[in-house]
Amino acid sequence: MSNHAKPAFDVVVIGAGPAGAASARLLASWGYSVLVLTRSTSGSPALAESLPPSCRKVFEAVGVQNAIDSAGFLMTDGNQFCWDSGMPKVALFGGERTGYQVNRKAFDEVLLTEAVKAGVGVQTGVTVRSVSLSNSGRRDSAVGRTNDGSWHRTDWGSMRNELRNEVSVHSSRMTVAGRTDDGGEVLVHARMVLDCSGRAGVVARRYREHVSLSQSTLALIGIWRRNDGWPFSDGVSSNQTQTIVEAYSDGWAWSVPVSSIHRYMTVMVDPRKLGPDRNASLLSRYLSELRKTKYLASLTEGASLDRAPWARNASQYGAERFGGEHFLLVGDAATFIDPLSSFGVKKAMTSGWLAAVVTNTRLRYPDRGPVALKFFEDWERRVWTSYRKKSADFLKKASRHYFQPFWIERSEPSTFNALDSQGHTDEIEFFRQDPSVQAAFGALRDAPLVELKPTEAVQMTTQPVVVDREIISQACLSLDMGQAGSMKIRYLRGIDLLVLLSLVRYKTDVPSLFEAYQQKAQPIDLSDFLGVLSVLLGKGLLRNEAR
Image (cartoon, rainbow, N blue to C red; front, side, top):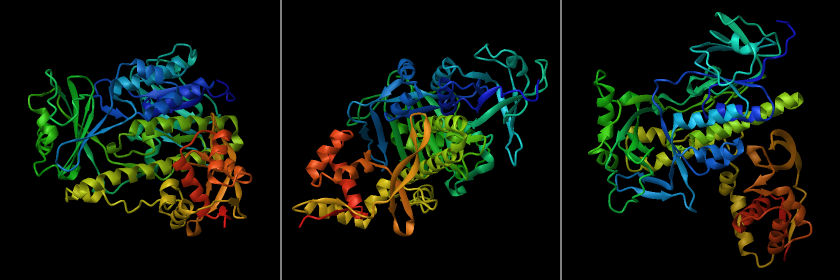
């Protein structure tokens, strides 16, 4: 082949889980040539996951909502929680909203099928073994081996024959090199590589940051069958589709139904404290932990295990970086959150969506590349911090009842603050805690008259944002946060701050301003509107001149 040949693929995606399938489908639908390399999953047990109703938004963004609705997954209207050894408390999603209870193999296959329909090439049976990232102009490469060489598409011409036994991925605009289908190493060139390989972290593992050993978690998983229905107790919803989460002294357990007769039951434990008998079978350890629960253990009476239980590492981890010149770390390859949150799939697919947007921006507009990469890294870091804080808040509730090391070690989020050490902000939580904003809200609520005026403290700047399928620079406000530095912000509670400030120049009382904003922008809640006005007043961007 010519040393000046163009890359065979615009993007190579390592891994075909939710993050990989989402990013691949979007990029292919936007006109890019995309190849997914994925390991064979035959023989490995499928997991079950509970997907909240909020997942629908990302399903729609990726373009797979109709396919998921047509797949026949079990629908659920809420969850049940047992945090204090009492009877479960039902938490409905409300508003007739429903989530999904899915078998992950079936769910992932739906996503990958939709990616193939969009034009993605998929080669299964590939284990990517190593990746040499670019450094001072060196080529990026990922090297792997294929088991069966199977393809979902047949229109890739001679490249299909070259990818038979050895696969290398070069993230560069360099030469395509390869061998024929009788074996040997070949090179698959790409302009970008997305590591969506999950916990394996083909690229990500060199940048991985693990939580402390005291917070490591092992999931022990079993599938239970009960042909005559599950015996829910009086006072508890008879809805057989709800997820059940139960805390006990040495861990927590959850049960996810995937059919009317099958429930996954998983116990989350500290792997260091599974008992002194290290020779005990996984089955005996699993049953021993499950017997420590009350409600879930009672449900298993009269039920049978459909298969031997298995173990999965469920420890959280983050990353010190999330991308480079020719690669991105996406979904669970970048960070893994506590399964307690039930947002793992949503987080992974949202990461895949954003990775596609960032990749599209970098390939079409190279001058925006550094800004797009920083946007992606900032977003991933914020999500990681936010989900860890939410999990710790849940765990703290259980620690008040179970004064045991498992709970205490996980419920002390010493590294969590509204404004973290990297300067990434959970804006809503930060402003709720700000005394000046609290005081402004009280003054606004109690003021007999209100006449709002912008102040000289209004400072404009720009920040990167997602618009359609690109990262662009957009005008925004710069807020002085004191010792925390400055904050760039355009929207708060879905309210466009620049539109609001422009309206204040001729609508000075709250009712008129509220009405004018809804006519100019979109309908909003009055409580959110008053909260945003309090932020602008508290931070000195507005003042009340009524006397």
